[in-house]
Length: 310
Image 1 (cartoon, rainbow, N blue to C red):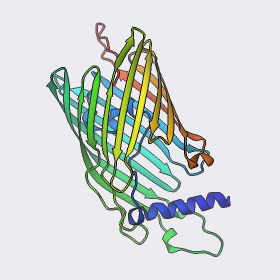
Image 2: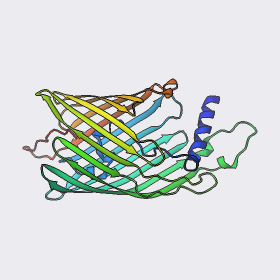
Image 3: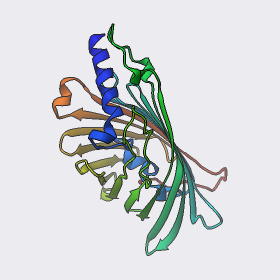
Image 4: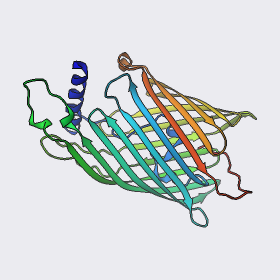
């Protein structure tokens, strides 16, 4: 109980002061980003030929009490007679000890045919809600602190943009999902904390190794002012169009394993596990993810969905 209290107490103080003493990654991140581009780039909306739905859950730092817990839902589809417009919806939740963050964003993308692919320009807009349940913390006997007598809630509007180019074999994108650097509550509890712009660059390519094997490498570069640049290198092997096996290296301090089961062109189930290669491994066994993706095909007998690689 003492260790749990100490962890909650210190983490809450750090979260309260984050904008005052340090800067770091704020955007919710998932290991299986390459199978859910809308979470990073609004220009990804409508990149599929049909309605595409994804649910994902992540438990970070397993065995570490109060570690981040993330859930996400996304859906996007092309609309219009020529399918040049894409729309999407993204909902995310992150819980870290006594802090809960909720994101709700709608996306719009317009596709322009370029050579053998499409260049999409995207926008998103929505709200971020942050709540710190400070009253749920139990202070040591005999100690009182007015900072913990009330919860802190903040509702922040924001918008973002992105660009995404894709063919049947290649994709590349650049995005800034949150452009406004909103300030959080400027009370004595949360001082000078603000949202920071996150910059994402993604790219990937599909190679045919033989009739039964395909290789799909990815690169994700994440940058936010005041924090080290984060580079995620990934390679996924597709076996007989039904099983994905992948490995990722994140800044060379995390080895991540991925398993995706492609039941058919509509349904995909994915798993990921992050093995920690740092001192954090002394208190946590790693992080786990599970993802379910479903593509809603039109009810037309001759309509056959093409395989989805990006």
